[in-house]
Length: 214
Image (cartoon, rainbow, N blue to C red; front, side, top):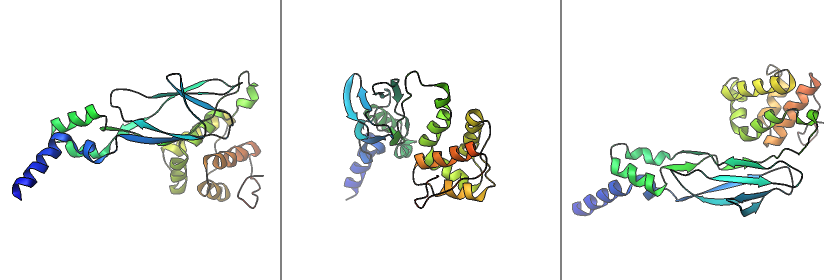
């Protein structure tokens, strides 16, 4: 019995925890309010938004996805990666770290969900108002809600900064109606509409039965 335990322990050390206990692929999903967006990897079509794709984990290679739509500017994005927490168990074993690095399991794709928005070609200047704020809200939806809930945080501060850039003022978080509706927003699009409508009206807004701004 002791011999089996020793063999198993040696195998885990030699193989790497992340390689043993983590999947070799990550599922990444994309969605958009815009219709007709097509995604490509290295010139090969991989899907029409909305869609999901399984990407092999890589440590030394970055994955780029290109999004195209007639009449809109092409956008290329790099899928973000973060350290796979499982690999932290290998801190005392450099062979295991090396194995995880070679297998690709030292890193994982995170976040696993993206909202895509393309910019129209030759768009009038006024139609671009709020585009920086919108992109930030759509990419950091959960983090913004968390910061607004607790009343402070880097993500809320960044939102305020972008609001001043795009609308020349920041949301008034002392307004309980605004704060409550941001916290209970169901998706990034609704949160952005709430904030942008408030910034444009500079006062308050009316909510319909579905919780959408009028």
